[in-house]
Image (spheres, rainbow, N blue to C red):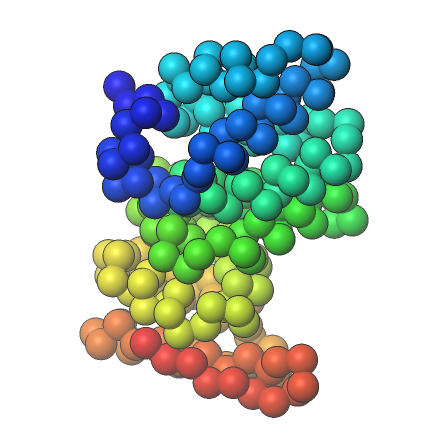
Length: 210
């Protein structure tokens, strides 16, 4: 079983960019949350025996449950560093919390600040999983927002990962989400080609293709 010390395996598995300073900061924030005067370094040593999945779950739980706005903001900047492993949880948090919730807004910011490659890997893993049908309606509105930022690169990476049947399902949901007069989707399943026009903040249509 992988632990936090298995650096190379974790990078391959989750494309994470966590540094030792991030682990220490999470331990310090956890100490503050529990109002203990304990040594953060000692807690870090305990956490380092956990699997990567356990450590991420601990961090995500702290992000959701903390009573300190500063702690949540700091964790929202760390969560993208967990790479593809964080994508599913961030999508779920962004979906289930109230629209004006600080937790929801920071989860969306975490997704937006994530590097495009682990973001695409995480989305691809979700869409090819058994939970794909449940998650597609949840992911699609957020994916439209992310496309306005990452555009061509994100679509290209998804096209490389997804099976044809999954790609067609994604295209159908994107078409539904973008089916207004300001957006247009055209799709050729044989060529794996998708072309989307989305108005940006200056009301100028931007065309992207892969």
